[in-house]
Length: 87
Image 1 (cartoon, rainbow, N blue to C red):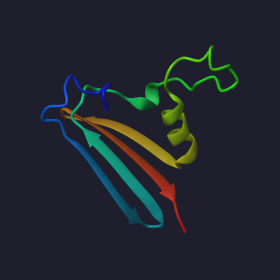
Image 2 (cartoon, rainbow, N blue to C red):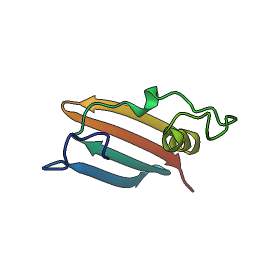
Image 3 (spheres, rainbow, N blue to C red):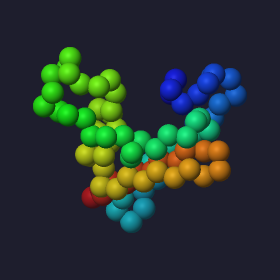
Image 4 (cartoon, rainbow, N blue to C red):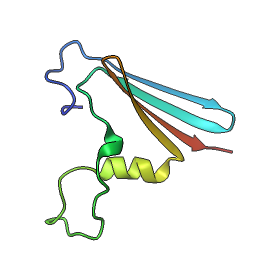
């Protein structure tokens, strides 16, 4: 959160979660600076902690666990949507 905003004043983060057609769909929208997490390189999981770049593991986890992940810039908002098949 701190990376996306210049300040915490008057900022909005909207999270929606729904189920549809056997999928769990979660969407996170914010009005922070533009950031496409899908462009972040996959971390080297074989590197030691000292050799690794800071960050990126959360994004890697989301990409690995979800069935479908999309990012869009809609006007002044970042919108990340993840989908996971459920029973």
